[in-house]
Length: 496
Image 1: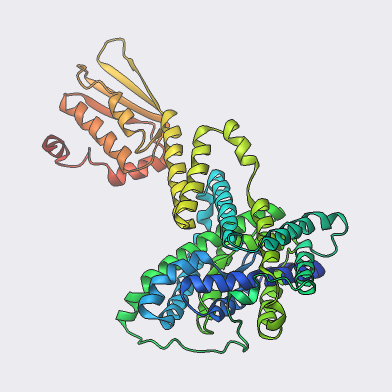
Image 2: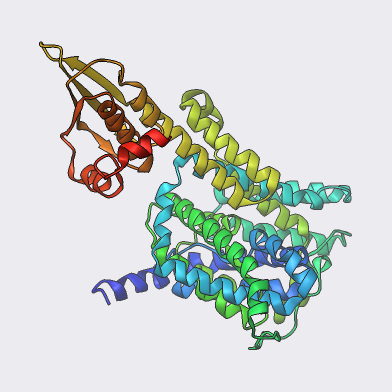
């Protein structure tokens, strides 16, 4: 245990008590309709999503790596379970949730949280913008075909959210929005859609249970693909949300510990009848904007959620959905990076393409993993293209005309291998060829193969070839993979 562990834990749990308590209550209220909706998406009872949100929030608050981030049941994981529930039932969903947790813990122990450094800023911006759009789109069912009073209430809720902070910031404006709109709806007897209309709230505490499934290889083969997908998507969304909260709060987080925390949460949740989940950017934004910063905010959100649905379910059920829709619209507006629109003109074209592609693919597929993967792949392609453009080959002929020295500049890898090969004149009659790689670096098997081909072609024409200036890393990969000094190399070249 490091010397600063206890002071750090004290600060993360008790350094922001009042704001964490209030923001946790706001988050708990906003979690209820979402957890119910995600349960419906997965094809299970509302209590499955509500129990999951309680369990995941509490456990990640304790063992997660990002204080102030909210984790619960999410749409991203719920949509992956639809087929499993339809074909095999709830018990297999619980087993898949447990296995997903094991896989996520394994990812954390293998330090896979560090892969976030390969996600570019353009992908992050696209991810944020796509989520903002998806959050707003998720509110549309509550705004289409509803009484006109709903629009009045939503507008009033937004006015409270944005104007109340000018009066005081002691109480989070989203909490005031919920209280005021609920009071107005009750006082005037408005016939509006409420939280209770989303589904029946549970009235008992969750209990420990073992999934009722056969423990054999067939079961493993059924749940493994779903568990792997849930683990990957859950970690991707959690790590990217953690990075966003890092940026918003000017703090750092332990990404590998977050992987472990998400895994432990899902593992335990499967044993109390809950579905898999991960970090939620929308709820995390609500928490941060309401003043939540510490672990206490997520912990309290989970505890309040359970109390609200089990003990105060009758009161919670009368909250008008218009209040929660107003909060989520505020979240979507605040989440969207409006400056990215202006930056489309100023930023490099490749960065703008990556950002837009991430947004379009994510919104079209409603799958964050596919959208982010698209952005990462495009970033890699554009980066490789830029590095390849920095590659050059120059040459000089000795005074006697018998030796030509080729000087390689830049990074020799798959994207520059063709340019490297095309730079040599194999038809020139020479006694000796020097390939100087002092100012170059050899990266991969493609570059080694191109080097092999150049050396063997010159030797086939009768020239002696010298490789010069290879650094230690380049020498290591060439020694291991190169063919040009091995017996029969020339025959293999001729056979091609």
